[in-house]
Image 1 (tube, rainbow, N blue to C red):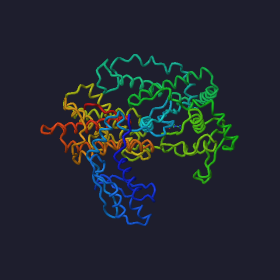
Image 2 (tube, protein in one colour; image 1 turned 135 degrees about the vertical axis):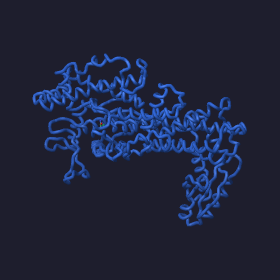
Image 3 (cartoon, rainbow, N blue to C red; image 1 turned 90 degrees about the vertical axis):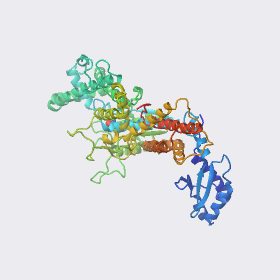
Image 4 (cartoon, helix red, strand yellow; image 1 turned 45 degrees about the vertical axis):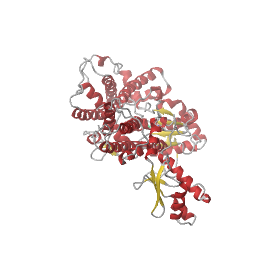
Amino acid sequence: MASVPSLAATVHQRIADALSAALPEAGAADPLLRRSDRADFQANGVLGLAKKLKGNPRELAATVVAGLGTGAAGDVIADIEVSGPGFLNITVADSAITATLAARAADDRLGVPYAEHPGTTVIDYSQPNVAKEMHVGHLRSTVIGDAVTQILEHSGEKVIRRHHIGDWGTQFGMLIQYLIEHPHELDHESDTQRPAGSGSAGSGAAPGSAPDAEVDAEVGEAAMARLNRVYKASRAIFDSDEEFKTRARDRVVELQAGEAGTRALWHKIVDESKIYFQAVYHQLDVEIRDADVVGESAYNDDLATVCQELEESGVAVRSNGALCVFFDDVLGPDGNPTPLIVQKTNGGYGYAATDLAAIRDRIGVLKADTLLYVVDARQALHFKMVFETARRAGWLPENTAKQLAFGTVLGKDGKPFKTREGTTVRLVDLLDEAVERAAAVVREKSDGGLTEEEILEQAAQLGVGAVKYADLSTSLGRDYIFDLDRMVSLTGDTSVYLQYAYARIQSILRKAGDRKPKAHPELPLSPAERALGFRLDEFADTLASVGETYEPHKLASYVYSLASAYTTFYDQCPVLKEENPPELVENRLFFCELTARTLQQGMALLGIRTPAQL
Ligand code: ARG
């Protein structure tokens, strides 16, 4: 494993050194290097420097150029000239481009370095609620959280996942009481007698030969159906029967007191939900480990201490019996301060208390250096108040916690995405539809050479990838419109376009037979090869910046620009053409292969599959 400095970094260093040599009195000066279309790079740093030292920028630029003595064989800089008021236009040597790429190709990690100072990050993501359906908001949290986790781990960071599921609250009193009074409602027997092959409509799988995913999806659906039934039935009684209501409320007290039978039923409900969640995760192609599912209930025993410490330190005060934390800059619509309520008047603990307890655990016990929360932007005020409270209490060092607040998924009407009936869209329905649309694309592209099973497998990878990519290619805070037609399109900024680009490269590599990829730094490069080469070389720098700012959309836009550069290369630089000399074929195959590896790695970090054949 060797980290490979990018061409940009190497050139930057050369110019910085030349600047200091030309102007020792300036100390370390930034050449302000950037990519340019006049040459490969432009450095604008001379201007500011000349101004500061009251010199002539063009003269200073000329001195820097003279000092560089470029153009020697093997030098990274092939040409440098002064332009305009004192810019430096820099052209990189073809040989340096190919040699740098060869160094990347020789490394498993494509020359991507580990972070210099890795730490421990606790990331709170994919936090659905027990006994409820997962919806489109949980899609964002899961997909973004998974990508950020992969990207950070790839950089060497230790990442601890925390799925803070909603597994506690007064609604459990109602559900458990109902189960006590209707003891067989969550039993599985009623569902197991289904004939083989009676799965979801339109699955197309032959009876008895359903692939794994199908089975999982069915089991998950059945679990959710049972929970829905219990939820609806108990809600109906709760709303109509005052005596049941009282029994349900007493049940909450039993649950909190840890009464064994009550806890057992609670467990049953949570476990049933987890079966459903896992089925959705399977369909979504993300791995969520049970050990990382540490829901709200896990912090029960700490809540009293949290409140006591907050009250004793004066961070929180009693107001009408509730334990509250006030903020100067958080006012309600009436202009009065709106507090964070840590304990309600009736003694119950809420969402805020649990989050505060979780912070103490994550910093104090898990020893996190960074806390990330992948949660809907509409909870921004909650987290702002929770973080500030934890900071005042001395539990959370400054600038340690960050909410990766994501925007809302919108329907085509520009309003939060709803079904035609106005209810929230179930995540599974949406994924099913995406896969169905993708199947149509696969069918159209394939010339009858694929079996139905292969079509469905590819459709799953394309459809789910399309949904993930559409989400991840939008910057986190922005809302986006859920438009499946656009998402599964073969052209434009979609994962399907990227997956086809990848598969096309694989097909070229297969067709090449015994002609193997090999870098030939001695060969001159055409403009399309140079452009592709620079893109390939930017992978490591892109990942470093994505890991620092937690912006997966920058990785998405990188892989897209890489695939676009490849498309141009493919159009302009025939790889396997008869009359190409063998070295040229090898060198172009080398560009192809490195593009494929880089695309695959980049997409994998986003949680998107790259089938070898489409
Ligand atoms: N369960 C919540 C929801 O579905 C999200 C939980 C977010 N995480 C947290 N630590 N509060 O909206």
